[in-house]
Length: 300
Image (cartoon, rainbow, N blue to C red):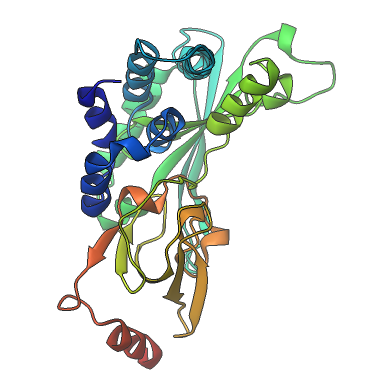
């Protein structure tokens, strides 16, 4: 893999400290790490598709890695193909946000559309006609159905083929393959690839430059109800290795596992799609004193 391609993929990470660290120590990343960075990034499926195909074209891949990349591209290609079909598609669209308790909630809809182009125009017009600050925490959830009698069993409702996650401007960023049980990609390697792509979650297990005592500011909006501070207590390399503490609305300290999206008080009530590693930023003591921050929260 060329340095240029590695840099193009790592550019998906907005966290300044993590980006600089991974650019310096690219040898710590494996092929699957680059694929997971692409899969979880908050960018368009088209951009992800292009990066996956560039990875597949890398000449120094081993045979198993070549097969793995072939399956990754097939998984992404199929999701894009269904999305861009010119007929037989029905889109059910819901505007997603957060209720008064900061739990994921449907804010408007559902609406029905029959083409991707018309849907994107409609959500863009909706956004520009109703623009205010609340859009920082709003996005669209899109279920795709196929209007085909051959795929509907007698006395059964239509089931979605895919669920797509779309930003406020109509850009599709994630997909969930609802028909995973069909095992579209065969074999153990195919199952691993489908699990990696079909079920979007905030997990991203990368080596990090952080140290115990670092305070992070993490802003994953719109896929989280706000920006949050957390204090790192332990830092290790595995998926549960970064333990952090954060403050709930009552001023109480809670602890969680950063890489699994547990860095704010009601994370289990939120549909998270974006790993906190993409946008975490180390906060200096001049910017925020953790003890003062806790005291302030307890007074509220």
